[in-house]
Image 1 (cartoon, helix red, strand yellow):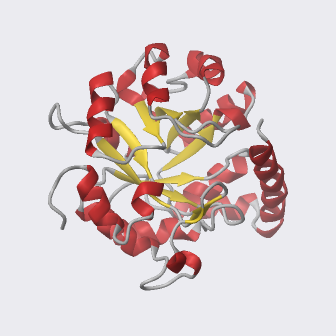
Image 2 (cartoon, one colour; image 1 turned 90 degrees about the horizontal axis):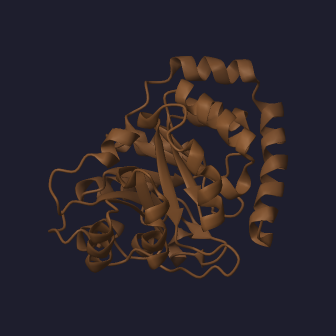
Length: 280
């Protein structure tokens, strides 16, 4: 595990233990019982109206360890600054199939409360993008309205991953199982589609965790190792309509795009440009 990822996971373990002391499992169960049913994230991104369609999971992100603050005004929350609900509306108007929301606070400047604000603003399903290492976090995710969660293969043993996949499906949430390397793709490959194929997507992140460099061709090189390309999501390094066309040509019809959109003055306009459609 690269140093930055190891640091994040060590902090996340302590963070989760603190959160458990503040909110009991019984309280979480009650919140989940009262929550609206999950929106179907899997269906939203795997349905394509024509051969030229790519489903974009548009990401809401304030900062990252590699890039820092994506725009100066994102330093603070609020109108004209970092406003997740407003960004989600712009994404929805300009063709997003679904929303990804960073909720890690320390390293990405996120908050789990952003999910509820986004879901009040748009009808799209929302992925909680965080470092999920404990079943408690899945209950927390559903309690706050998440329709899907990210599971990073590099952070989990196979046994931990399988337990989380089962629980996520029981809670009605889609999982995006993300890999960065060929080695981890091969490690999780036998379990793709477990426990139910209609609840799991497979992500290939084009960012090298060790060097933090991004290579869009990474997804295309590894696609032959993916049994069902229809559930494959290419993540990181996607910036232009030509990138989408190249990925479609390789058989990849779903992408997750964040940094290139969030660096723009208007993320919604940037999404429209990526999708080669008029801005709304």
